[in-house]
Image (cartoon, rainbow, N blue to C red):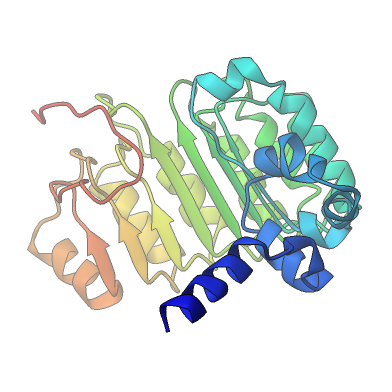
Length: 270
């Protein structure tokens, strides 16, 4: 029996992974991020390289990385251009973190008209107002996630996004720093132009009760609403009751953010 176990172990150790069916290999490689595929996996052998060049491998492009190391070691924007080219117009989902320019954003939109999900995290070199123009080429967009560290998106840009993307069902527009100023412009733009929303996150936004009421009036299908760190929202009994009756999952201003994947710089509410 011990000898048989040693043989089994030896067979496993000497297994030739290149003998796996191509579809199985593709399934395994697809679990890697775009950076790992372009920088490592495709260089293993010609078979893996051919699989990595298949457009079906690039329907989803994940450019997440460990900032700041990979940002300086690799030309991430150049790699992203290349990944978009490999999708051959079949890109459905893309995630970009810590890098990117308006040029890259327009490049993605022009070559990915069927895009359904776009995530931009702390892309400080992208002017977020450019999203309004980009949205004109993304009529099938269903999910938009933006984590902003500096510039806010203008009311006009949000309205353009809403009108250009009629299928939009999820908007995550979260800020790094809690807003001290009172501002309902963004909430009003969302309420007026995104009637099909099911999920809305506005962490650290400056909206007030007025903005919240507008969202409830304009987004009649809303099921999830996240208002954590929105300390200008102070609903009375009637507004609170309306939220509870309308929204299945409600995250209130003072709820904990411990389960949020990004860190928000808190401030003490007045």
